[in-house]
Image (cartoon, rainbow, N blue to C red; front, top):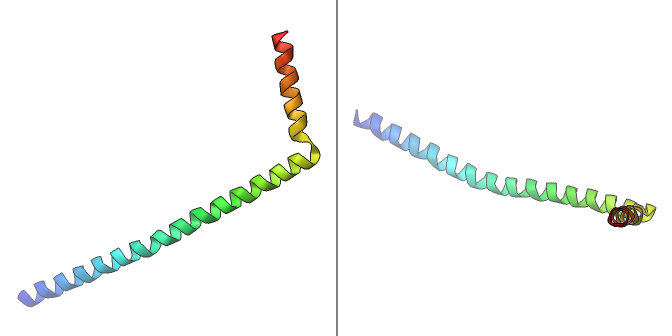
Length: 74
C-alpha cells in the first residue's frame, strides 16, 4: 500500500512539474503572436496611409468635412 502511495505521489508531482513548465513555455509564444499581429496591423495602417496620401484622399475628406461644417453653421 505504501509503495502504491509513493508511486502515485511521484507520478502526480511529475505531471504537475511538466504542466508548470509547459505553461511557462507557452507564455512566450503568446507574446510573440501578439507582436506579429501588431506588426501586421501597423503594416496595413502604413499601406492605407501611403495610399491616402498619394491619392489626396485625406485632403479631399478634410475639405469635405470643413465645407459641410461651415455650411451647417451658416
